[in-house]
Length: 356
Image (cartoon, rainbow, N blue to C red; front, side, top):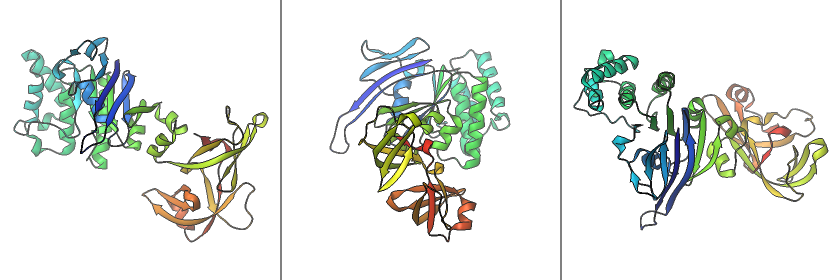
């Protein structure tokens, strides 16, 4: 298990603003995803754990072994920390073959053990047939697999992955995901993976840490975070929510209902404990949780009739843009059949109206 209390501050300069990383978390066996925007401190967090940067305050403890402690001056060099580190780009020596790259990483092992370990990993990561080639003579996915195998050759106590799928096409990304699943099966160890790709986080994470402006804004499983973002910055970062400024007009705990006023429209939500009448809140509702259909004749009670202002399409869905900034996600084929309609009826199910 990793326990990390990390503080690192950068003073304001002529060319950059002040920044402080201040986080505390624990990581167990499995994949923990560190999710956040560029500049939030994700790579810095990995560097402090690996020993490529020094703490201003705090400590790093890995399996009860102290790697760094700013208070006592303990600071183990990176090569002594037993942290396998995979950088954003596979950092293989270009003049060495794949086998030679791995043999170099295994220099600390006895000769027979070194050869046995390297051969086993080359076979495990499907690199045995190309082990005599140099990095520029193999594909990007093969280079990445070699980088991961090299990180594992000395049996690290944990694995740090800094946006490992960055720059890979879809096929190679899924190949990497299979490799990571293989690692978890064969090498049960804590993995801390940095990404700003939400889909990747959901595919890979057992647990997720959301980093915003150098602080952990929320921690939990990906599903927990998606179901209830802790704040507007987290919801904005996920990119799947409408954030609607509203006022609480009625609270009915007996019937588990509340009424809110948004944009001169009344919305019905669940009962919100610890809230008062007149409270101004932010309603958070996922784009794909809003029911929407073209307005045809009389609308169902509680529906909102809004004018479609525009739409944008992805490979699988359409994002419908309505007045007041409301966005609804709809399957692409369903929108394709109704794109000519201007007025649409929207319903927000009571249970989906979270408040922040």
